[in-house]
Length: 62
Image (cartoon, rainbow, N blue to C red; front, top):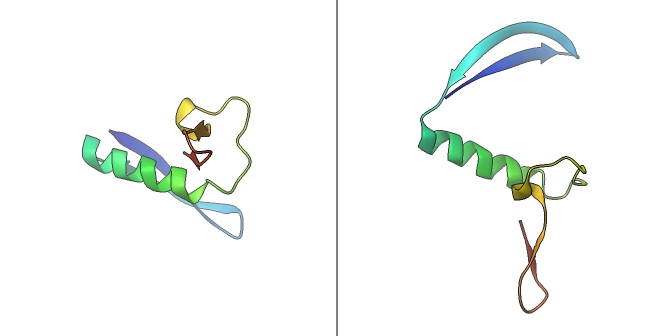
């Protein structure tokens, strides 16, 4: 899996670089991003993994 990263400084593009990940690495990045964003509002078009899941007992998990 490869992602193109855009590196910026003071909101101005500096460079782009490919980030190549194995499937396992991509899963870890995905999980880390979901945890990092869990305090942010979830957009209507967000993927299911960003939507709150209500578990028995009332505790929410993402």
